[in-house]
Length: 124
Image 1 (cartoon, rainbow, N blue to C red):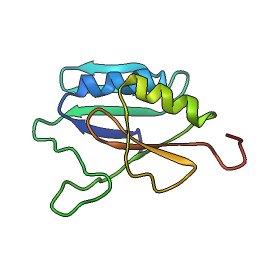
Image 2 (cartoon, helix red, strand yellow):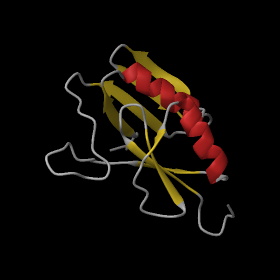
Image 3 (cartoon, rainbow, N blue to C red):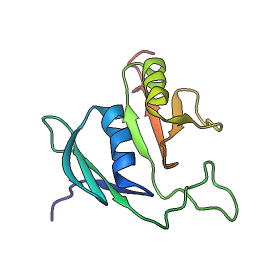
Image 4 (cartoon, helix red, strand yellow):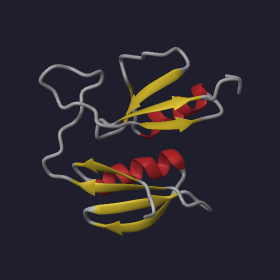
């Protein structure tokens, strides 16, 4: 068995993949109308996207009678302010609810939460 990565459902796989391509600076490894995979340049990490026409945006934070978040991405950054600005410029939304001072929860264009953080002791 070989673990190859995470797959995020979205109303439009290509649209969401393009957001993460710009956000992370990763390369397109596979591209078809309903499936796109990104690959870390020079690495083996992958993040894939699948079109799901019945996709429902998750609620953040969790709310009764709403689609619950099933997973989120953690993205380590060197400069939290600069990378938050970059994420917003690429189409992310800063979540209204922020449970931690040193982490910024954002929502991608399909509503998937992801966290930007600086490793403890790294500054910023």
